[in-house]
Length: 322
Ligand code: PBG
Ligand code: ZN
Image (tube, rainbow, N blue to C red):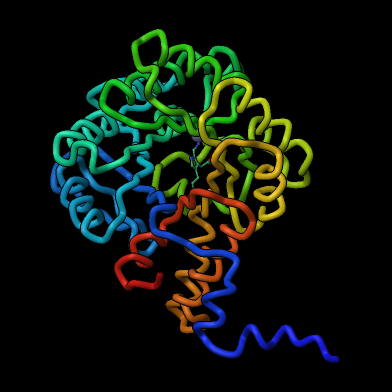
């Protein structure tokens, strides 16, 4: 007798039947950038297909996304007024505040709005927290993050997503939301966020590159795996509703091990550099974009991600790649 695994690959229907992983559009969360002004649709050079929108054009764009079946956003603000402590991050009339209110007014509960909570687009030095000399002061930063999260919740965000990697921020943000009457606002934590070269294009998009140094004193060292469980379990204890691993492609092992260590839903963030590499190679005709993108999406699922945050979501839904 010869064992023949190939029998189950003989035709498309057979392969459909035994497929172990299925990707569904309901898993996608689509990142978008909102800036101040009116009538803005400014393409981001290093991220073909992705633009800055002002609140009004954001509403128009989201209307077409909803028609494609994309109904979950992760919203990033581009800071207009920057200072040392990032005070404009929690100014309710900043781009995120205006954008969230405009989206909520236009679409009600047909749209799930998540907002990124971090100071780096609002500080004049581009770091994710308040500086003491040249180092980022953890506990002083927490108050700022809490105010920012409360502002987003008040504007109508369904989920707030802290990406700063300060210690203890999940508990402080949770307590602040509850104290201000937003106990139903969910919290998705960027629990396992590595100091990564893959964020390069994003920093152009969000105008958030650090003016000196790097983020290695707060974001994780990519040589570490056990430490990712420590971060994930702490965030779960502090009250996070959803955990995240970021970036995704180079961290499949981490996605898998976090998944096996928690009962919470797990998101992975297929970040800007991962997107730009695929787009650039596809533009050169060196790879088949659809094949590569769908292979990556299934890989995230296979690794254990429940939610996939990806700039590819619009292409996938528009071109019916699923
Ligand atoms: C800011 C933030 C970054 C990303 C999300 N939030 C960049 C950074 O930490 O430098 C990266 C997203 C992407 O690359 O797509 N805290
Ligand atoms: Zn930041």
